[in-house]
Image (cartoon, rainbow, N blue to C red; front, top):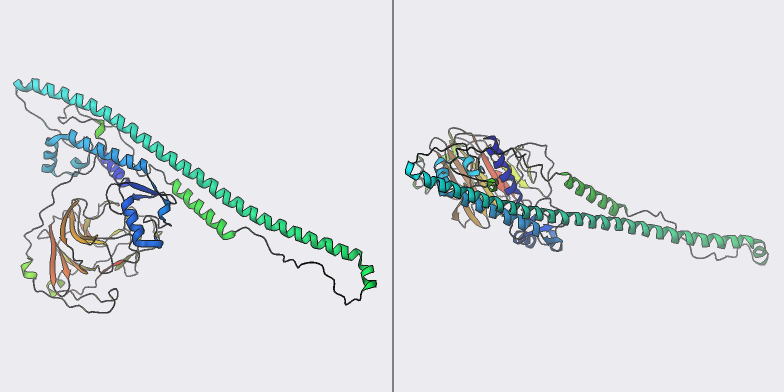
Length: 516
């Protein structure tokens, strides 16, 4: 089990590194930002630049971003292509019987483990079929041999791509070093030129004064003491210094670049343990299966036996106040139908991403224009997400979120074990509705269920644990059911929130609900 778990983490970390943070999919025609070395899909970053205009910045580090600073990242594209091919080969090698067993068991380890299984299947065969079994075993051995050769070829291509990538980085670093040193030399040369010019002018002035001094007696005899004598143009003596602001900026940029390089490439990858193979394993696999990703599963049916039905909600109304400014408008009053289950929910400062910031009351989260330097916490998200501080494992709970001031968001619940880079709804332990790209969808197990093209401005979340039901409502002048999940809470779940990371100033607010 330990070996399988580490293989899962390795595959997951690799998939994270090959995923664009804007579209949350594998890189498609990746490009590299030269200044900060961050990569994105060409279409995603182009759309981002078009949206932000001249104020565009890197979505990861918020550094300066210009279209002419983007270069094609061919080595990364090759790595993504190789990884996807290996994933496809692995799934074909597993065969339909393994996938059927996987669907029946629902075990996460079976989905993710690469050739290491926490069970053994024992077969009973007829004596007459032994020969067929032997032939099948030899065919499996031949397939493993072939896959081994393909794996070695894939590894060779991956290593070649990685070498190409590092060669590019080395060349980039050398070029940057040369440019920086040239700038320093130019600043020094300009300062020295100013000093030399001033020295020449002062020397000429001294020579002129010495000449006047040597002829002073004759000058005094032939002229009156009030007579003016020309000694040349006045010389302005100024302090000559290097361009402090420019040099300081260069020093800071070099230090920041060095700090980025200090982060080891393999720091997120766990040490690979030796693989253990059992001679009794019926499903034969080989080393090419070491990289495995999640296998998509069918979404749980959205209908449930909850005591709260959609029909009973039609016509229920809640009041709202209209103002001239959407950002300043007050939140609508809660429907009395849900107020008895109202729970006090706040954002958790221990899980909030560095790209987000909280208000003092922990009821409002917004996208920050700069990366916050929060204290280290192993639970902190690496993407623009945050959990609620409160957990629920029994009973019925309700809370509301104002979403009107964000162009992209997700609201739902998640287990405490959700990965730091896992977006809501992309695993078995998180459920949400998401407004993204002008479309509202429900997400669970990485399966999307389209809901509507209309954006809800207020979202009510009802977690009915006894009825195994999670419901989302749009709150306007009436309460409208958006979606329901069937949810079986075994471990405590937390309110969970995602907000579009490049929507600077966009925010989500947890409404203040008075419980009856």
